[in-house]
Length: 307
Image 1 (cartoon, rainbow, N blue to C red):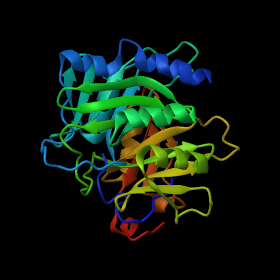
Image 2 (image 1 turned 120 degrees about the vertical axis):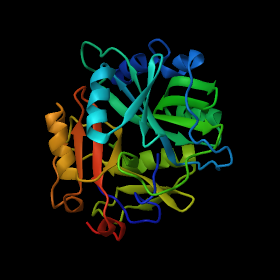
Image 3 (image 1 turned 180 degrees about the horizontal axis):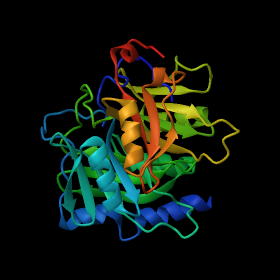
Image 4 (image 1 turned 90 degrees about the vertical axis):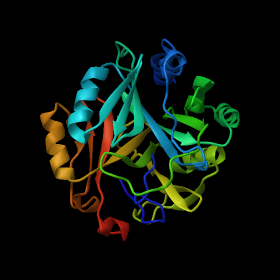
């Protein structure tokens, strides 16, 4: 993973067959969109005066076949607490709702694994759906208005990477320094980073800039309103088992301690900390259900663009 020192990067909190199987995993029983009918989804921000920030990742969901196991892992690893809203679980960090979890059976052939996905703030959810359909993506959960939350939908992009969009009723969380336990960054792994970047530019109005911390010309940063929001990185052709996906990162106080703790909690280390990668301040682990999540130890050196 590569993180740019562009304006808002990390120093601000952001909140085929496999796709068909993923759609069934998302849509079974109507996911959390239906759970919210009889329950309650918290607003993205308590202050209705907060502006909308199109292009910002403002929420995340985990779809998994074992919510209790995931809850225990993330509670012990990040200190998250949880609210039960029927079939939907909301995770809270320092009194701030930051993400949700919902349970769906895993296909017998394991064609759709548990995963995290993020929600992008957009000005118009219906326009986002049209962009997805025009580009060859899929609608997994059609646009729906939810009390207190606003309007949201879930899609698969043309490569099958899962993501959501939301037009918040109350505005979006402001760009503030990420606290430990908060989402701090998100990265798209793509087979065609150039094409993927252009798709998301059309969808959310991003400006595309070259990633200045990688030697590969096909790695990009997506920016909006002067802030870097995400990186898009090309999957090496040799990594044939890696599927296009969004990978979110949580800020931690110590990557090495968090990796050791993840192992103790039954997680697996997918990318170990190494001096070659942000001076050992980043790692990727999988929770006990198999969902990947990034860990980032934020330092002043990273803010200055150190590798």
